[in-house]
Length: 127
Image (cartoon, rainbow, N blue to C red):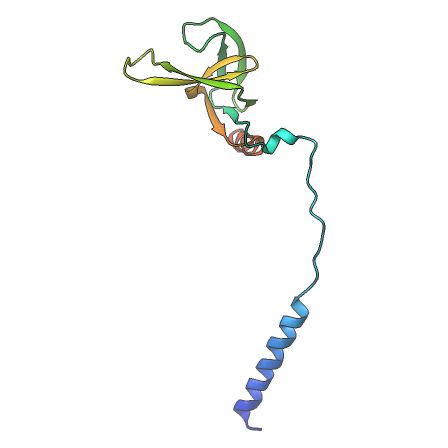
């Protein structure tokens, strides 16, 4: 066997042995937390408050009285929304989101597809 064939043989042995020993049976069971089923529900959207303090309005308009308050980084479940005429530009529209404590304008929140994304966003905002 010449030197070139020997090197090729060693390389082949190395590749086969590394492929054989690197394959392991890693069948670990994936744990899923089912305690909070609405966290990943596609039918429910979530919002994170992006203003230092935001005032929940009783109705979906800036003229409506303040009903309650929330703070920057709060994660809230959206219960509904409304598209209203803008008070600044009569040709524009504003989206208002309904929560359990009242209504917030789209300028006060960022909307996420699920609770886990909203919680991660809130965590990164408050760092």
